[in-house]
Image (cartoon, rainbow, N blue to C red; front, side, top):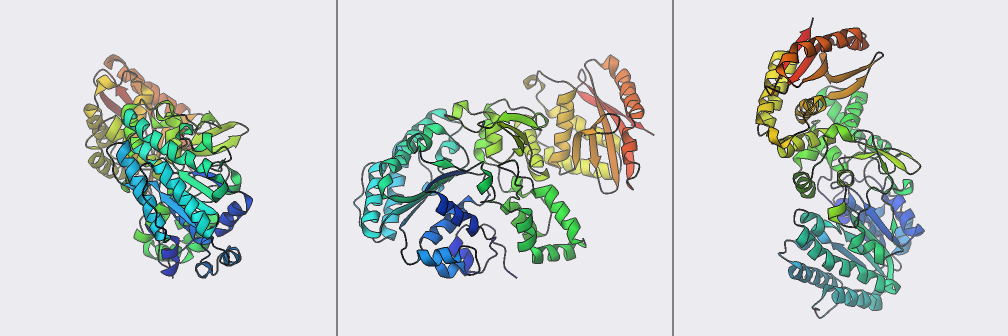
Amino acid sequence: MQMLPIGIQNFESLRRRNYLYVDKTAVLQKLIENGERYFLSRPRRFGKSLTLSTIETMFKGKSELFEGLAAKEWVREQSKNISPVIRFDVSSLGSYANSEELNRSIIQRLGDIAEDNDLQLQAEDRSIEMLRKLIRALYKSFGSVVVLIDEYDKPILDNIGNVEKANEVREVLRSFYTTLKSCDEYLRFVFITGISRFSKMGVFSAMNNLLDISMTEQYADICGYTQTELENNFNDWLRIMGEKRQMRKEEILARLKDYYDGFSFDGVTRLYNPFSILSCFGTGEFDNYWYTSGSPSFIVEWMKEHSINDPEQYRHMQVTSDFTSSQEIERAKPTSFLYQSGYLTIEKKEDQLLTLDYPNREVLDSLSRMYLELIYQVEQFASLGSEIWKALKASNMSEIVRLYNIALKEIPYGDFSNRNEFWYRSLFLMLLRGAGIIAYAEVQTFKGRADIVIQLEAQIIVLEFKFAEKSLVVAQKLLEGRKQIESREYAESYKLDNRKVISAVIVADDEKRQAVFYQIK
């Protein structure tokens, strides 16, 4: 039984230590054989670094590491005439106060690569000259050069809250990347990865032969695990988890799909986030690893600086196919950032229109927590979530609404002028999801749509939300909600379910900044 490669991004280390590896070498071989210049955008924790490490090892012809893998013969043939590789991880440059320090960090890293290849190069004052010198030296000594650049946009995203500094470092990086175009005759293969796609970075304008494969069906599964890969490669871990939790394999797979599946970059192929899957098997717990591993800082900064819609408004949102492209940070749209950071995914694709949605429960819960913490500034959201869990299990609607009112009291009302039924309901949903509770909005029934449906192991709670601008109409709104639930028979949709079904109306009293409820017997 192979160990789980949690946090291991080096292909050679992974293979030599006999860690579990989901074979992606067939698609990587196809990539190499079909072209020479590529760009790939993928969210964090999705295996971009391991992908580049695997490609590096393939070009270096280390065939002993590919036994049992799809590209074994290709690598064996490559070992007869290995290629020099410049693998440049931009995220490894460390901290820098200005563009001069960034320039020096790049020069030092290029010097390290030269030394690793037994080349003695005199340091240049400009990173672009150092890169040009390194490529020419490698070409003269070993032949056509492979260039692999990881996290190309990290210095920009790290400074998203400081546009002036972001533009400053962008100029350094743009000059650096455009140098590759002038060295094209010396290059065999170029592959650049990152999270975002900024055309002003120079990567796409200068290298007009760079093929963006980020949203192509042909390479949709280059990173991440498909359902088939999950079941074929993690069978032992599925068995162990089933024994630990006393669950059948089918139940484990269903839970994994609900929590971690659903990422799609072409609207067709569905993928699991590798980090969450490995962490889940490693701990044996269905937990939120996306949020606890640290939300990307650029999303946090963006949410603080810009007005982003409530999470429910992004569900099934339609956008054009070029929605991820942006010239610069200041003009990027929230949907672009949420998608490229993995918080939204492509639900389906129709011609030039894409429909976006959240990939899975883990991601939606994570975004809810971020909203509570950063947008609504509910300091007690973690403890409130724990108490809401207890109240739900006890079917104590009175306690649930009391906890909801605590959250309402913490929110700076002056920051939100658009308070309405949707706003109050969205906050309630975020409290539930932030606590990891399964809750659905706008649930279709045979006679209408229930506002919120909460699903627990032993019970189902159906809620109708109403908004009262003045306290005088609260009683009227409670009655309206009750009649709506009864006339449209929301609870009847679950009569074949063995779980207990509870129906209730919640009315948000905007004048008093609190909610009241009525539970239908």
